[in-house]
Length: 168
Image 1 (cartoon, rainbow, N blue to C red):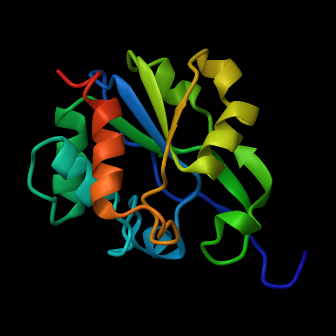
Image 2: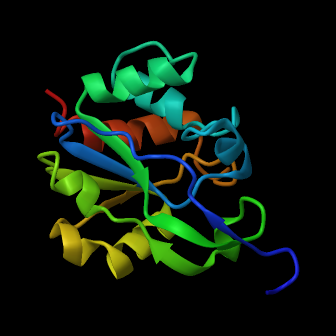
């Protein structure tokens, strides 16, 4: 294996319930998220601030509050990759992808929309998972701190304009 690469499994379960209508997919958890055992654990990632603002809710302070926030609004959360070779947290380094079993969610919940958090997630979804769901994904700008071209305000505006069509 190339220097610096490790084959890593995702490490934690998707978040969904029978009321989930929107599926948000990232690419693969960061080193910090893998250590925490939950999504978007890096405090520099703007995901939770974007979602909370779009849902007109306070930013959740812990993983239980994050779970509640999403599930109460019909949002499922997972990643497109079950395992891969990766250097640290770099999406650009991902190779040898084993896609997630997205049907685990789509057979248990009435998913109406799929949102990919960033281009890597979108490309991998189109390549590996879209045929299984039959749903074309909306690729939204990544909430990652690496996406410095998008301010928090622009992310909230873009994500909110899409989410509002599905939130009741």
